[in-house]
Picture 1 (cartoon, rainbow, N blue to C red):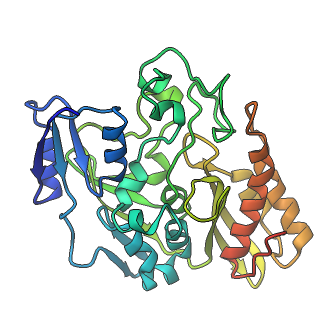
Picture 2: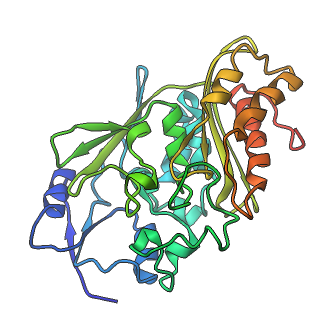
Length: 330
């Protein structure tokens, strides 16, 4: 492993300045360091400086004021999951992170780190494969092992977005706030890009831009549901985040976003439209509305099962958002 310097930033502005110094050829931002350590161990990066922002925190890293929720970039997943006021204001956020990874990881991993983590594709993570994302000539998933890869998006790289928090913030109109450039913020809906817009990166942040905090709207009728091979420490194979506006048990409007099925948080607008005027107490009508979740999918050789599982995850997320009991065989 190459040696590197460490800069202990006193503020996000300090961090942005350090990230922009021309004396460094590959500065890397570090908060919880979970994904960074993986990259170092796997030989995927060789930074010459780590800019540590772990200690850059406000007195109250998570606040709810009026109709707005504010989350520090360095707030941990454990803090988000444990914040009672946030859970009441937008349950989808707490639900999205409360079972992510392991308790040890949740105690260290941060909100911004979760949003900006790199893909978990086993070809990208294995230094022996020079895949498209690492500057190589091909996406090995196309003809290789692809059971956990994307069913939406047209490539050329077929990663799935790894963040649970991103789709949850997406349905809550989340915004990431920045320092280090002229633009003060970017909506979460526009934070990520598909591989055809740049295969080497996953987000639109420019060098030197640093996330300071995240804001989003309250969404008391919201829910998250992930289906995993193991419901404990494991990555979702499909996930869904939902925000509802209800009149009694009837959906007036819905916003639905899927995770683990595309290179970006995937807007399920067809489901949002199908859910309008559906009574969540009407199981047949709800199942029919959620069944359109897989439309437009282009599964690969080994991941067609995701097309069948996605409507199930969406339905369970809707029921969760509506405060209704989720039957495992529903």
